[in-house]
Structure formats: C-alpha cells, structure tokens
Length: 448
Image 1: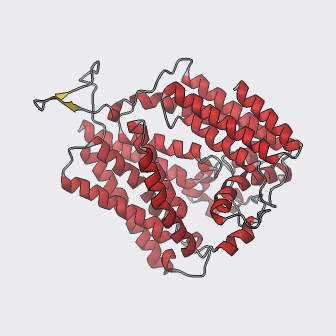
Image 2: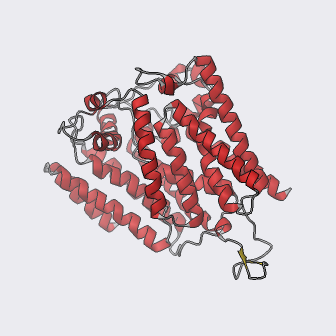
Image 3: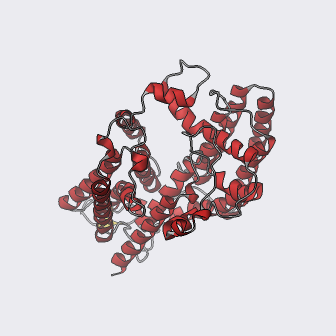
C-alpha cells in the first residue's frame, strides 16, 4: 500500500497543479499494480481486492482526465473519501485473508475427474474420496436453470401485456426501457441474467450430461439473453455475459484470450443495435456528455463518461449535501422489496446530486457517504473488504455451483465499483436471494 499511497499523493498534487492527464495516469498505474500484485501472489485472475482497485481506483484515474466540461476539480474532502475507502478496503481484506494466503487452488468443481486408459475414474492425488463431490448436480442445477428462465419469461410477457409494448419495437422514445416496469414483477424479469452463468457452470460440472440436458440448458440461456435484448437493456445483457465469463474463470482459473476477444466482437454490434433501438443517436449523446473536444469519437466518449462522471457526481454530493440520511439511503432495498416505500414515501424522498439530470450513475460509495459521510465510507469499505476477503479464501473450497455464482456476482460488483451503489439496489439483493435459493436446491438434490 506504500506504493499506492505515494501514487495517490502524487496524483492529488498533480491535479491541484492542473496536470489532469498525468494525475489520472498515476492512479491508473497504482490500480494496475495492486491488481497485478494480487494476481501474481495468488494466481487468481479475478481476485476481489485486485478487481476493486482496478475498477474503483482505475476509474478514479480515468475521471481525473477531465475530458468533459461537466467535470470540475474535486474538493479535498472528496479526495480524502476515495483514499480512506481504498485503505479501509485493503486493510479489512488483508485482515480476513491472513498473512499467508498461498497460491489459489480452484478446488471443488475445478478438480476434474480423469480417466485412465482402461476407462476407470481416478481422482487427483491427496483428495479424500468421501469429501469429493462433483458440485454441479445435474438435477438441481438444471431445475434452477429451467425454473428461473420460465419465471423470467412469464414476468416479461406479463409486463409486455399490461404495459402494451416491447421496448425493442418502440421508436423515438429514448427511455422506453425506463418505463418498462411493473413494480415487484420486474425483479423476476431481470433475474434472467443469472441463467447464462448457471448454464456455464452446468456445462463445466456435467461433461457427461445427455444431449437433451445440454440442449435444454442452451435453450434456456438463449431465451434469457433474448429478454435483455427485447427490453433494450444494454446493461442487463453485458451483466449476463460478464457473469458467465466470471463464473467460468472462478472454476477454471483462466480463460483463453481468444474467447474474450470473440465475445467482445460479438457484443459490439449488439451494443450498437440496442443503442440505436433506444433512440440514442450520436448528436443526442454528445449533447449530454459535453466533451471539451467535440471531435472525440462516440465509442470513446460514451464509455469514458459512464466511468468518469460518476466520480464528479460523488463530488457534487460531497459539496452540496446539507445533512446525512442516517442509514435510510442504504436501506432502500428494504423499503422497496417490502413495499414500504409506497406507504411511507418519505423513506425514499431524497434528492440525488448529479452534474446533469440524464447522468445518474454514481460510484459504489455514494449512498454510504449520503448516510454517514466519511465515517460511512470507511465503515462500508471495511465491511466490503471483510466479505471479499472471506470469499477469496472460500473459493479454494467451493463445491456448490451457487457459491461460484455468488463469487462471480461480487467480482462483477467490484470490477464495476465505479458504476453504481450496487448494495443499495434492490435488484442486487434479489439476485443474491435467487442465488441462495439455487444453493438450497442444489444442496437438497445432492443430499437427497
């Protein structure tokens, strides 16, 4: 952390002197160093501490470039929040991890059963046969895949029937998806994002599954990927694909770069098509982003602003917030999932402080500061560090497929920690609840 602190101080001083690009490069370098150090030490490509620094600190570095007129110089208090959050996360993670975490052994599903020339199964040396278990029990995992797909598809059809439209087929309305919600029902619709990663886990854990089972899982994944496309939700589509990749890596420990490149190429046309379907043309987006260089290509402008402006939204919160909400903001999932927000609107009646009305994405720390200021940021980051440290240690011994799915979700939240307040989002907790239900189902089938 000494290198990170030195880089952070240097970045702060450069920013105060108006050297924005060098300031950002210092933080990006620090983030990459922490990620590389954790990867080299453990062999874990998706080490949660490394991903947090890569996402949050790296995103902060990108924001330091100040390429948009919407961005301003941050207050010292904002810089202090970002620093203390990283230190608290790192310290709490290290406390949970212990001094000698060792190299990562994927364990569980990654311990593949091998065949000898005679066709007999052999287990890896040193494994206890009574403790060995192929985690992806075919019945439980297949039931989860088909069940979630059926519920999600039914919820989508219900929303389309009641609301009278499908966002993909609507033209001229930039925010058609934003209105495609029936309260309570939409959580079930978007649960489809969990099916592709579960399908990946099914294929990895059941190489001898029947052709019918494999076809059924593939069909469920296809339906589940079609729903975000019909909803014109670029985020849900990226989230589903990202979870699938992370689930694969959590089991196999590595992934072929050709696969990543191929997925990236496949996602580009889909992303462009969905952007067009949302009536977000280049002129519309450039008018919102207000780049200092109007000639900046949109394929650079859009991802840049979806990362950079979130930190300026946090700075706006720090500068303008009159009083703390004392926990009410981070309890929003409780008010939403229980329906209390409809009976007591004051529980959620808090203004959002952003640089522009259309740009409402914020960082992971936004609600923590909204509730308790710097103390909230430090406490929340430390708690997150403890949980992530525990999961990294647990990864060595995971067996139930739902545990790998949980790890993939947290890895996604850490990698995208620059994007939003994941743990104040009811959908996040709904996903976690569904993951818990999958865990129970797989355990019941395995023991039964």
